[in-house]
Image 1 (cartoon, rainbow, N blue to C red):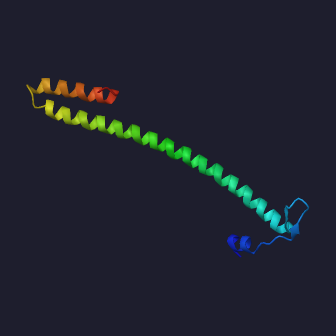
Image 2 (image 1 turned 90 degrees about the vertical axis):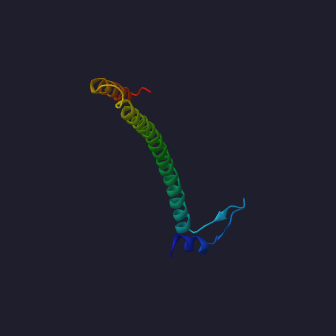
Image 3 (image 1 turned 90 degrees about the horizontal axis):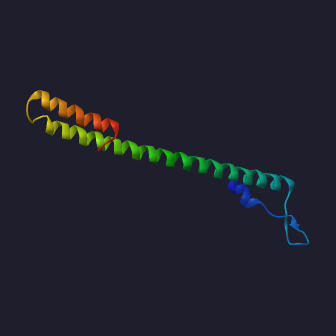
Length: 104
């Protein structure tokens, strides 16, 4: 029997004077186990949510870094065509070094 079927087939054995539902012992223990499992799953969900947020932030940083590197490479390629080879190499190295250091 599935959990859903068990829940659907569960019926109270009566009510107390305060209107509380009385259940068979097995049903009561099963419901308590289900409640504990819900709490565990909610905690696990919160942990996964935190992990997903952390990955999202890391991914954003990597995207920004990748964009900076791409722009530096493109700029280096443009700069490499100006002047003599020594000057072009010097300028290219400067651009790439700034990109690796996190400068714009």
